[in-house]
Image 1 (tube, rainbow, N blue to C red):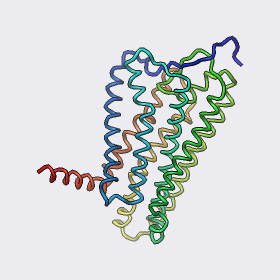
Image 2 (image 1 turned 90 degrees about the vertical axis):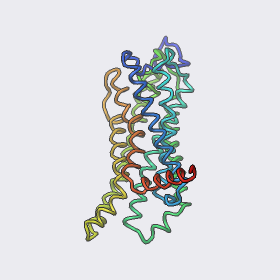
Image 3 (image 1 turned 120 degrees about the horizontal axis):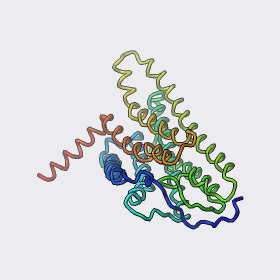
Image 4 (image 1 turned 135 degrees about the vertical axis):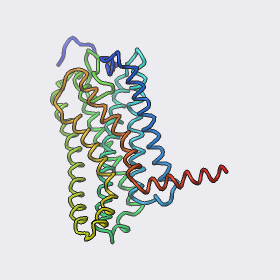
Length: 310
């Protein structure tokens, strides 16, 4: 127990203030990155909604991923942009808990949806005859709902463990959002046990979903290699290329955040940028530019818009 300490009612997000001379540059960079991220995800959601050719399980899951990633960025980036320009970087303890809960919940949801997308590709390639009966619209909806329930169940558990007790001064969170490792350090109770528990939960969830995806791709690859023609192998595996690319980026950056050892002040802030800002930006780009169906859908929708204006 820490004694002679004042219980906190708010935190101060140190964020990028340790790089004071770069804050305007960071603001401009992150603002446009966020703008492009929103545009890309909204475009994917709109295309999957408007184009009947994309009303398939693969693109239903893609639309669900874009929606969860849009919500994910909303929990962090707007506050971060305001703090880059504002002198008051405070956040209330309940507000911090809420931000952490949504950040972890939506991050977990993204991981599970990516896992479900891997399962979808496995069934489509390895079990094509039963695929239409297995991946119905109802089944897709249930899998997306389970992804949200699973993500927020883990998030609620971790957030409850972290915010169970009181927090003692100093009230400085050495991050640009309420990152669980930074917040745990301010607990009045013994934070080491709590940190170990929530880290084990996060790493288990991260590795569990990643290993499941890897397992599906082992079966997919073995099936693809049995296709006699090179063109057939290329065409079949091309449906997985964008998903696999996003998986590598998503889990690669996430592992840096959760598996790395503690670093000095400021380093954690910069290390979290790829996972919280860059990954959501790259995801819609990869899913659109590397996907022929999405590009054709965009051309069709824009073509209809042009035709209506004439």
